[in-house]
View (cartoon, rainbow over the protein chains, first blue to last red):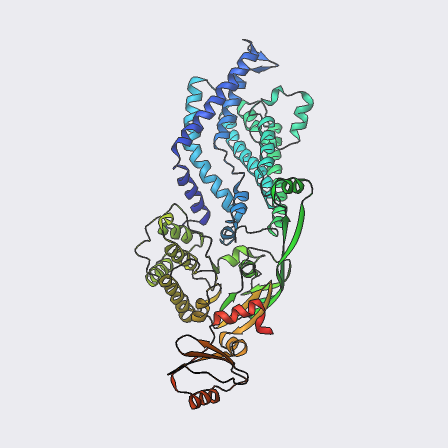
Length: 264
Length: 328
């Protein structure tokens, strides 16, 4: 059987992921613990009320289950490029007749597929049984939610892709990545549902790619946005993916000339 | 147009220059100092299809940088380069499918997987047709005697076994050009011999163009017909091994063993040195002194038991070239 090189990379990373079982169980536990903490904080803040500013507690819970659930298998390896530059294996990487970015994506997707089956699904079952999730606004909306979630992954991946390109200039991108991830945590709605953000912050966040990652799919799932708002949401996601990737490729073109092979 | 054309290629690296210790570290944090190191300076050469060329030079001479530019990993700062119609750093992906590269110090095999699994992965990456893959795999593993360890994980292999696996890995897709960067580094004599014979056969039978760097002159003597010597980023010599001997290796050493203790009279242009066991060494330049005459003179004057004439080792010629003596 002939498989494409990218499928081979994805399969390899899928298989490699299964080698670390303890890490995997800990990952599921981590998702569930965060979920319980976030939900309990908001339950306390709600103080027994049903709604605050028109947002019901069950909407908040659903927001957390969905965004933390998606987060659990939205795999991006922020250090893919920098680790290869650091140990010099970029040399052998560049000798393969495949696109570097395609290979990076295939690698991430292989891991993501593993996490989808063995992390997302069990965590979701536990969450739905013990915490409870609101039903989607309708079958059509559920379909749109899935589509939007896929685009959300695209946005997340593209942000990481662009930031990774700094590796050509900075050998250590840890600080840059940490700042990036703080922005994603706070502004994507996975820590604070964006409904509670003050008005001007909401507007500001609307101009960043962050709400496109988790919040847009969640809004669609709950039926909080409809019709033209959904189209706008999709448009924003696609525009961000294209813009970030284009920018990333431009930096890549510049950075590629600066490759230094460390260690002989 | 030649198969490989390199014209005035230069590559400069920016190196952070840091003083030692904590004061140096603090100074470096606020006012980093950089210096520019020219790894390769305006190098030019042409290589024809089917040639086997050895690159030698001391450590840090720019050999590996040249190989990395030729294989499309590094982008030259200036100059023109074309290999088989490709511009390596621009058409990296397409070019990579046509070449093979072996780095003696970097493995392209998967550390945790058996060798054969890495080969299978490469088969998918290079889209090698099944029959071609099978044919190449059987032939190469046989030639390099690899059947004993092909199912072992790479991390359990000896250096020589790993190197052989890496060589096969880079050849499975039948590349037209193969670059070897120190393929015999750290390999024992038998292993080296196997690798050399393999390289030679591949070049002769399959007409694969090969370029390799090495520090081992035996590698060059046994395999290459052409030699390029690089030092401090520039080409010092480009030609055949034979020519280098004629040009720079003209000194000869004649050693005569006498039947009794003998005091040898001085001879013009010949350095005479007494050695132990009644032996005397006569060092002379082949172009200045005629061996025939010298031998006659010695045989006529003294009672000689044995006589030998030695050519200089290629190693010592190259060593002289590195240190600049050959040009004096």
